[in-house]
Length: 436
Ligand code: GDP
Ligand code: GDP
Image: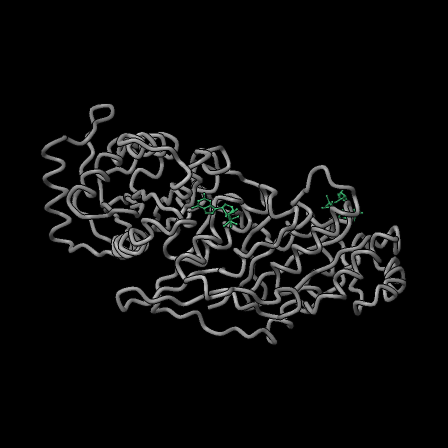
């Protein structure tokens, strides 16, 4: 199912983060400790009534070195690009300001539905302060108090009401959803064009439609693939495209909607911190992964260059030791044929189910080769294991005491499972449960 997105916008200090936190409530992004992963909460899942959606706090996307008005303009534009419904927040204690009018005018020009929240209306007596906000020309103002948690229900009612008008065409469950992520300029859009063929011009007027045509179907070996967010790869040529937080936000959204993630890096420049952060997101989300080193044409090579680069990738992306690496040039369209066989392979691994009997044979062998750890004279016993889910493959081991399942032993078992079954390109999870 298509999951809609709400963005909160408004000038600084009106209470965007406060309301964002109220909307997402207790639901915090659950993240594993992996290297290089940011924990900024500018994007999170939430629900209201029977609706599930994502929320973006555009105030969290700071565009450095830009004048103040330019910043709020860009934040509003990001909201228009990324969200289905926008909640504009103002400050009822200060009344309408020039900057509010400025933001409202930008929102008006888009056809995105806007809900107007007047914040800091902390008590009933203040409710008359909201009427002047009609002059923004974006509809009825709703009084709210972020700090007291008042009035938010009415705002969310109005926001989810707009979901009904979205063209929520079902996402095709049969196709394998593939996204390309990476920092700006690594060649994502060039790769999409190289895959689809130049004749497929991917242009659509993004702002101004309720639901953008963002995905493109592709067939390889009669298998149906969907390239996720191809419209989002178009060059927009805006300053905020290059900001790190926005590119992390885009990557998060693309990962969420895909089965297989291509992590694109620039072979000419090598790996930087931002590449690791983006790759970490794919790993955390448990997606199937292929590492694509692009711009390989621009690298001076001898017979050791590829191996050296691969070693470098392994060293920098240690948490992605399961992901295959390929080297391509989107520009020269060389080695592009390596992509889909790998995508197909990692997708199979990701959805692989192993038989319980075979799994348990592997576990018994593993334990006999490397005995389970002990702690204070007590030894871990593994009674049996079973695969509880796919995408990524997740196993539950029933044990005498979960405390005895140490990290290193779990890691050992993971490696044994990888040796026994082909899990190329997918993380695998091992959980332990106490057997009653
Ligand atoms: P942002 O810059 O728009 O994200 O605004 P923040 O959420 O950081 O809030 C700015 C300031 O306004 C903080 O000091 C908040 O505590 C305060 N604030 C937020 N919501 C309310 C409210 O409903 N009533 C009052 N009185 N203060 C609020
Ligand atoms: P994106 O921001 O990740 O979507 O990157 P683009 O696809 O817009 O590419 C950024 C720049 O890198 C453009 O100037 C491309 O022409 C160039 N580029 C993309 N792929 C390749 C490649 O394989 N080799 C070389 N030499 N340049 C490339």
